[in-house]
Length: 160
Image (cartoon, rainbow, N blue to C red; front, side, top):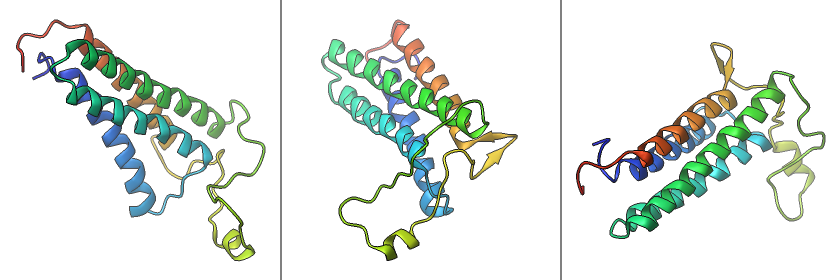
């Protein structure tokens, strides 16, 4: 399977699907409210999903499929780089956001403000072995992007 010409676009689809899906499960299933930088990490994964799905839809055009897969790998890597920045803020290596932010648009009432959970970007909500969710996103995203790029460099052994 990993030697197939579809291996790279399939992996490029699976990585952001799993990471973005995990973020949604942690948010809606476990109540871990994302901060502004958490949302920043999601946007490149959303783009990667679109690029990878486009690559799989363009299977008959090898060049288009490869180019879209490269774009997906770049988007995955960008999420990993944002994850490094966010983890650095959490660990106190550098300063992050210095202003308040919200995902609310339009007029906001006092009741909405009071009901909004306060989620700081410099305090990890969850850690495992001292690694925050932003840190795990950085690790898995950068490793995943490297895997996709490695698969793109290989010569496929079959047409499927």
